[in-house]
Length: 154
Image: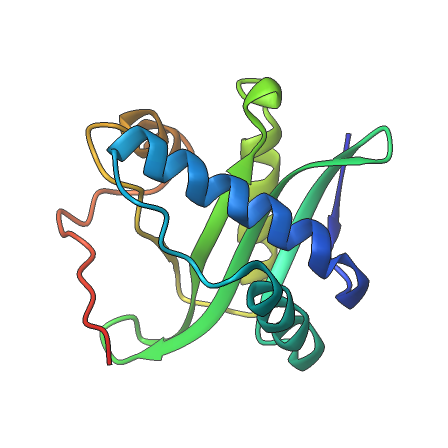
């Protein structure tokens, strides 16, 4: 198994993995799938990779992509400068609990250190359905910010 930084040409596999992530979240939370159209998602992913505003690491095994983690850069006073946000993180179910997620996360943290980020933040999927995700992050050095992610559509 190897981890590599995604290239623009990887936009299709990233989009497919993203869609699998969203389907799983919706299935476990009994919510309707609400994501952009597949072709629009492909276009967005490709555009962000081309602009280098979307940093993605892919896990690959035997020429098959089995997971990914995506990051974006943000800035704030409370964080003391630039920091990273994990936007999406997914490992195919049949490959979980084999250390792949930890390796992807370690690669993201290593990248953050090279960028001199002050921190990396993440919002977990809904609890309690994804309590394993919450525990995973805590086991990998994240601390509970005791907040919840909110959104406002504009």
